[in-house]
Every structure is written in C-alpha cells, then in structure tokens.
Length: 125
Image 1 (spheres, rainbow, N blue to C red):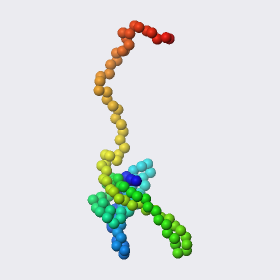
Image 2: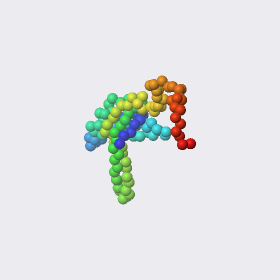
Image 3: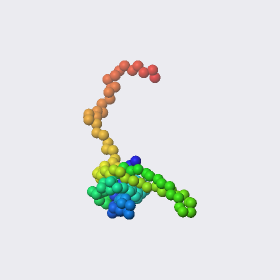
Image 4: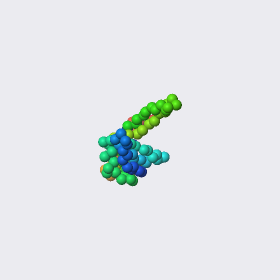
C-alpha cells in the first residue's frame, strides 16, 4: 500500500535495550479531511528518513501490521502499526490537483455549411 502526504513531524531514532531501533514519521494526508498518520521505520529502513525535512511532500510504501496481546488479567487486546519500507519525494506540482485545459483545434474552424451545394434531397421526410 502507499500513503501520500506532507511530512508533518520527524522523530529521532529510538534504541531499546534489546538493540532494536525504530524511527517514526508523521505525514499529513492530502484529502478533504487531512489525517495525521504515524509511520514507523524499523532497523535498516531508518536510513530512508535521513534526507527528509518537515514540509516535504512524500509518497511512502507501507505495510499494515497487527498483533495480539493478552494482559496478566487474561484480557486480549489487539494493536495495529503502520511500517514504512520505501520513501519517494514528490514534487509540489505533482501532488496538486490539476484542471484540464480546453484542447485547441489544430485546423481552423469554418462557418461554411458543408451541405449548401447539395440539391439532391433524398430524405424520406
């Protein structure tokens, strides 16, 4: 799947006791009701965020992941995460909706009636 939007926030890389690393990014989608979407980049994909700046337009390849967790009380909960695996900068012009321009005719328009010299009227009505 892909998400496209503007980089709203870039977070620093987090390193956990196990050695696991992640870095998060929030993009603001470009739709009628923009949504701030948090995307995680894990381990070797963290470097994809090195050249990004807040305010840039991007298209991000994502995977949606889910997991189940059972609390000590026996209650089961479900969590989702969005993981990024590809980042592509999008030019400002490419992300803006464009309006079609009326097409110009290549040949000049003639106001002459093409049937003016046609005296053979063989229509049945």
